[in-house]
Length: 419
Ligand SMILES: [Zn+2]
Image (cartoon, rainbow, N blue to C red):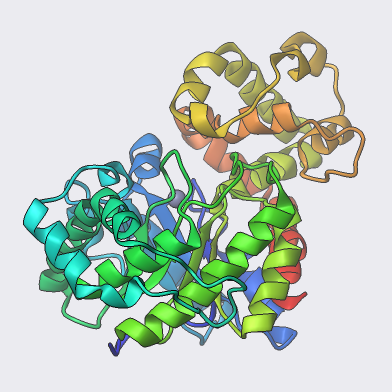
């Protein structure tokens, strides 16, 4: 399949809750370019985020356009309708050129018996011992396993095709980038399952450019990976090999690559991912937008005065509402209540103490991952403050921008894409 609009080898899902850090984020991509590495920015924001903040996809597009113009960025950039489905896609059609079709909810829904039979019959190539270049052990996908995996994922892939068709009708073939995401589910997909899923995606005629599987281990919001890094590395490497193989074997777009929905800041995985990409000469899309808002808080606190006061006020409110704020993210936050400072105690903290507890520097003894995670899910509190929050963002732009750019470049782009 050929796509008129295709995603570059390296791309990063940026974006921010309050749409104030477009330039500061793009600056990090510019710094990568100055070092000879092209990392294409994709502004992403999900329907859930838009409804909490009260923003629209057009706002995100405007933010991206303005940043691009201000910085003279002459490379591609995209706006991603993140985690959409048939119910939510309409409002994204006009402003976006990248669609992340989320079908995780349909995983495990049995498909029609006739479709299942057709799929298994059409894919006898998957049944023999299958040597995928770059994977150590050949896959042994028996008929029963093939049917079982197809039964688990076929309905989800069929739904992805329906969403894709709807977008295609509106935007035209080849005019947008398609991602299929299956990460927001309970159990990870193995490399063999990924291969079967991609065969089904090809059958459905979806010109998929990125696929977001669920990987092994915990991908909690805003903190580092929890799990077996060596196991992840093997799995990621096999997935990269499978993606390259499936693209050739099933005629999917040659730019097809993995999308890592990181939940932000999976620092301990960046080294292994970088090495695998080098080994396979492969690309990747990394979604890591969520912590820009924490860099805003860090910048506000660092600026002191009214900025620090507001950061403390946001924490105090978040602390009071911690149950409600964490509930929607129960599966992806891991907060130790005993590690959350009492707001009365925090009121006496200076800027440095606040910043070093919040900033994601795992080697800093003052870093407090529980404090960080609570604030990460507390953007609703700042959203409710409206202009009180936004005006301070503008007033303290310089301090904040330095943190946003530095975070994105030094902690993400450099280790992952530049090495
Ligand atoms: Zn995701």
